[in-house]
Image (cartoon, rainbow, N blue to C red; front, side, top):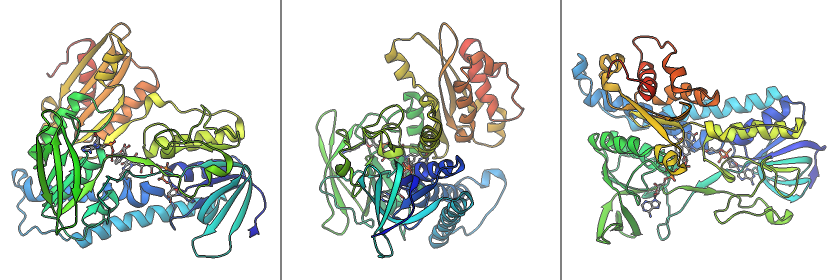
Length: 472
Ligand code: FAD
Ligand code: NAD
């Protein structure tokens, strides 16, 4: 095999964790390579996750709005039709632009982009099998950062063909709108992709094991409101129902489901079934066994506070290890890991990582949910404000949703902020900053917010936490 000169850092995986770690390491003056086997940079997020799903969510929303919500605004539009091919082409264009952009950033920062599958063969060596089939490359390195991400958790007995039985990867690439779609799992992927296909005309049923949708971390009040609003948009929900088995041997797909409450069984049929029951760490072919690195019972690579495995020079970030499977969380860790290598210190505030569900309206939150605060035993106060009482939401004819604050009863320090409503994903940034700075709800309520904006609902929910809101 051929050899290149020694690197300071070899990053395995070019997703949000890996590419950011590689750029930061190079900016810090370290000789850095990034190994990626997909043929494009950006990982799950840019290629088959965050970016393509948001493109489809945005454009399917515009389509749906023109079809169902435009007349009341005084706009008459006739003959609205879907051009699914064009919608997919618009998505592909965004993806291509962004993944290509990272390649340019690599060049600008002097990161060596190695296209191939990386296998750790020793503490200081990564061997790469190039995707173009060329000769194996040996990269000698002082440090390794593993950022190999995650993959969809399969549903036992239902083989994914990405046509009839799909994961999110198939759900961003269907070539026609299915008549009936069943989504297994009412977490973020299920609700985002379920929304897309429901808006485009599919009859969508979401089967969720728990008694609430939204996946782990969503505040119960927000989850309830989300279910009501999405239900009004036409998505059917079967919460407290478990999918027992599936059969895709016929023309469509049959699922056997069971009520968690009374064990009553039922059969559902659909043209397409989306499996969205979570994601699991991806370490196939990585060679962990060659260096004795262990994973936990869920497949996550075990690390310490500084992202180190049992080998001090091999660090791990992103979806393949602990914590929320979010792109911005992986990016923060990428920067911190590079800084640990160069400077010996780095930091991520895990208490201030926002979550956003990009349905319409969006749901967004940061900090603890009410159920988490309750479980901690801390005394707390809650303040809420409905968008129905917000002037901008009213003029926009978008009044669904609310802002909810949870603060420490004694100190008024903000513990959690939960929003469901128009633009919640942008609005939550203010909440993240509040938590990062250790703000009290009164700090926020006494900060001037422009009128008329949606963010006044944010201010008034803060006010309602220690005092009374003005407009509610
Ligand atoms: P990944 O992005 O998975 O990247 C890992 C990369 O490593 C891959 O490209 C893989 O090809 C490569 N790789 C693996 N093994 C090797 C090897 N041995 N050699 C070379 N290369 C290798 N998060 C958000 O924050 N916001 C969202 O809106 C959002 N939407 C999502 C929508 C969908 C449909 C999905 C599936 C996920 C979404 N996520 C979202 C989650 C987000 O995509 C992940 O949290 C993020 O991509 C994790 O980054 P990562 O760098 O850890 O791993
Ligand atoms: P998830 O863990 O969020 O939700 C999976 C849901 O499936 C859970 O509610 C679970 O109770 C349910 N479930 C599991 N087995 C079931 C069964 N047999 N029958 C019925 N229900 C069942 O997972 P996901 O939605 O697949 O998302 C995976 C990851 O990707 C998450 O970590 C998520 O944060 C991330 N992601 C984030 C975004 C975003 O930030 N906007 C978007 C998409 C994905």
